[in-house]
Length: 299
Image (cartoon, rainbow, N blue to C red; front, side, top):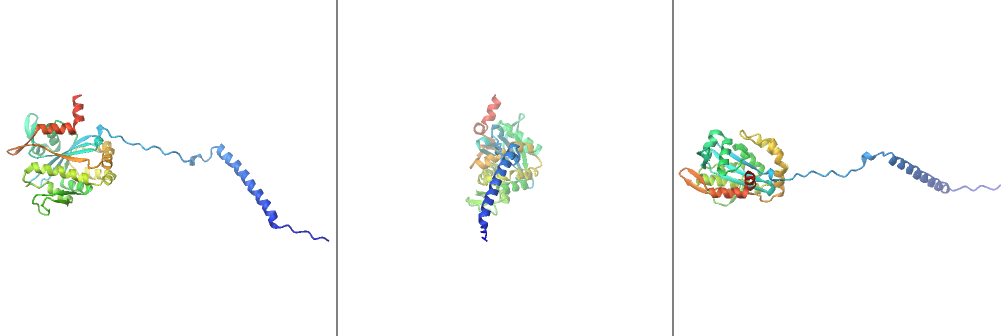
């Protein structure tokens, strides 16, 4: 009797696997077609990213603020610095106003310090408007603690000191000043040229400090810093709405600008105890930094 030959396992397995593979392809194709036809799974599709809104800086972002540093415990009881911000031009100007500056307000010759002492920062802002013939949008009283906080945020400054003050180099060379030293320096009451020199120191030092700060870091922490600083003042008409409307323009100026801050020294004459500014110098400042405001007023 003839013996039957055994079939090799491989000869059965190969056709079987091919059959299963073809079947899976057919079933998978049908399933995919149905899946697509009924629109299943569309929620997981990647959508093109929504374009990010980019704020546009315009002349409406320009603003003018009078800062008043109040030091009631010192002989030098106040420091006045006018800031003109023009983000669209990436330009920041600081003008120190000597405390003995005089001008005519409401038909009478007035002194900026006496105006401030009588009625606060709002009166000092009104004086500044009369002095320059401009609009001072906002004002802020700055305490010593507030100034130190602002200097800490900006990171101090490298500045030259050429007066005899304890704890300073006093040789006219650049030296790093921390926040406490800055506060002492700008309130020093024995400058050789009196209040005119002190006004120059205040405006130039602030301008240098801003140019030396890390703009990216400053802009990234602007929200928190504004809240902590504005809560320290007791006399200001700056609001959170003002900040919200202009913060993108301010951030853009700090992140995209380079050495954008400058200062101006008021030219004038000292007459007895008064400083009388030069009208031609004031007109020059207005023409260079307040041209758009002058144009609007003319129209």
